[in-house]
Length: 219
Image 1: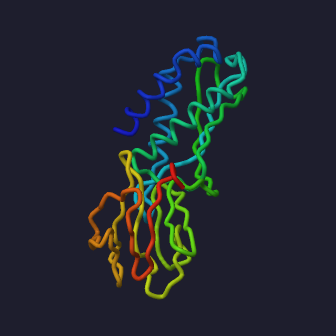
Image 2: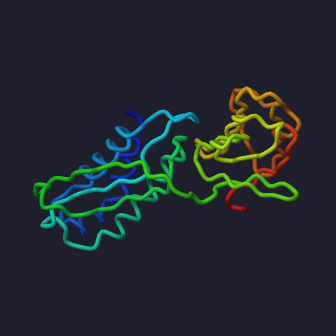
């Protein structure tokens, strides 16, 4: 329930004032925040890289409850869900989006929510930079390896199919080796299966492929 309560409280604060303009006071921020947070929690699933959740949410309200264009609220909710899933280390399969639509089937004064897992290209939040190549990291939890299923693919025979995991959680980046044959080192120190903080500018060696880790702010 930590995901539910944490996200719900943050959304409630953000929706104060905005919800009143859009719904004329007929839908309280607590109702909106609670429904979206619960749906994000219900949609959680176990991906091979770790915990994940849905990336698209559609909030449905009765058209008589809608007084204004919800675009500002949609943007606010989308950005907050993006931020919160990154802080919690939850993988998203595609870009996050929260939409607010109307439906006559929804009773007045209530709200419905549908969650969807919609794969799609993600903007890079980090990069592995080598002399002749740059590999983008877009997923919150990214599988690094030689295999076709890897999110960050390094097509070298020395690299294992499932070699390492890079993710962000708690406001920072992390790396862990996945029991690879030829190992992973960070600034010359071997990386095991326990998470190690990945600092901007660090030298990351995956088997015999050497990269510099670059955070999105400087990518």
